[in-house]
Image 1 (cartoon, rainbow, N blue to C red):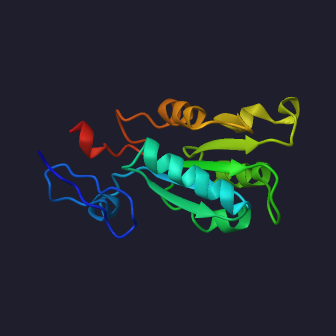
Image 2: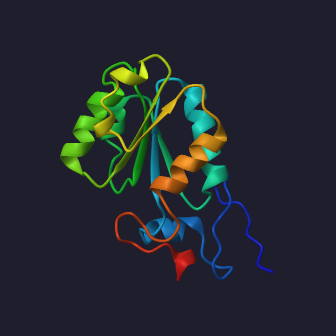
Length: 159
């Protein structure tokens, strides 16, 4: 049995042969990156903890608004963004993302914008508040399957 400790980021290290750490996998560009964008720190924390539980091998980044998110898009596979935020909302952020890299999956989270008013064709999925960890898990399974990495990089567990 291989035991994996906790790394300096306080989430489980991914062990393939008992020696590789999450940091090494990140450096090898094999770990999916998910960017959580929300101006509410409680929602950012909830989503980060849920994603670390659902997909512990992923690297979860956070941003407080769309402007902050634009500085963190390098090698990101998925963005989960709130709709209504200061500086730049989720729809404006998605427009920027689609111009920069159409391969990035974008999930919109909203509780205030009516479902019918959301431009559905812009987003890969939409989560209406309140949502559950199960809703997030289903979205992750649908958009970031374990079988391969969205940017063409294989996930080490699949080898």
